[in-house]
Structures are given as C-alpha cells and as structure tokens.
Image (tube, rainbow, N blue to C red; front, side, top):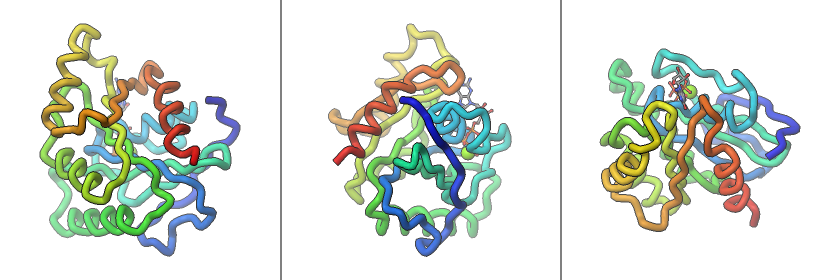
Length: 195
Ligand code: GTP
Ligand code: MG
C-alpha cells in the first residue's frame, strides 16, 4: 500500500466531535502498551504520527488519523492499566460503547494482542462486546519479533482459545518493529472497506 497522505485529525470524546466526511473507519482496540499506536505508525510508514510511549495509559481519547483521504484509523485508549481510577475506567467504557453503538462508518476493529501472552479478561470482554454489536473483527497478534518463529503457532492457538474466537475470524501476525504483516493487514482492511 502506497501512502500518499497521513494526518492526525482530532481527539474525539463525543459523537459531535467525530469527523463528518463519512469515510470508512478502522478502530484499534487493545490493552495499554500492547502496541496500537506503533501499529498505526508502521501501517502509514511514519515514525511518530500516532504518539507512542513506553508509559501505559497515555491515550485518553479516540484519536482519528486520516490516510490517503480514503480511510480513518481510530486509535482507542488502551485498557487494563492498573493505575487508572474507577471513574476514568467508567468514562472510557461509556465513550467506547457509544462509539460502537452509533458509528455506522466503523467497518472493522483490529483487536490487538501481544504474542507473548494469553489475552486478558479485558481482551475477552472487548471481543464479546464487538461480537454483540456485530462489528467485524480482525485479531492482530503483534510483537511477533519478541519470540522465535517456532513458538508462533502455539501462541496463536492460545490467543484463539482464550478469546473463544470464531473459527472464521481473521488472524494476522504483526511486528511493528519489523514491518511483518503490514501488506497482509492492508489487503484485509481494503477488502473490508471496499463496498
Ligand atoms: P497506549 O496508547 O498506552 O494504549 O499504548 P499502545 O497500545 O498505543 O502502545 P505503543 O504503540 O505506545 O507501544 C508500547 C511499547 O511497545 C513501545 O515501547 C513500543 O516501542 C513497543 N512496541 C510496539 N509494537 C512493537 C513490536 O511489534 N515489537 C516490539 N519489539 N516492540 C513494540
Ligand atoms: Mg497508543
């Protein structure tokens, strides 16, 4: 995928702040620090357009990035960070639920998980939430560079089993460090947004 333009548009909290040009949207959900912003940067070949940090819990709004005047990536704030207060967690839940409920432009959610670990309880809740709202899911297993290739299959199996994923769910291996999976993920995104 050739990237001709990529720009940050808005940090939205409420629906009246979502963009109004009706382009298809791909959202990224996952635990704090799992590598959502890094994945966006790798997909658009920019070092630091989506802000990344080694400190978890940094992204608190829905961050919209417009790519090639064609689609939006919507970077969700990560979940599962222990130091977040109950009030903040509840606000997060309301914001995400509203988005999932009302946003017709949302075509696909990339559920990002770390290849080294079984999905968390929060990952499973997110998965169930997406299924409940009948939103198409692509499970992206990232940080693949962190373990030897010989262990990938076992970890993928663990991810699918823990999420109790549908056998038809798409699963893509990814590494933002290496660029692994980039073309495959673009192909999938373009297929899912091309109707
Ligand atoms: P929040 O915005 O806090 O939810 O985090 P995030 O999911 O956006 O994670 P982010 O992209 O900021 O990455 C967190 C850390 O993981 C950073 O130190 C990244 O450099 C590192 N990281 C992300 N993806 C990869 C990867 O594929 N391989 C390796 N080795 N490191 C990665
Ligand atoms: Mg982030």
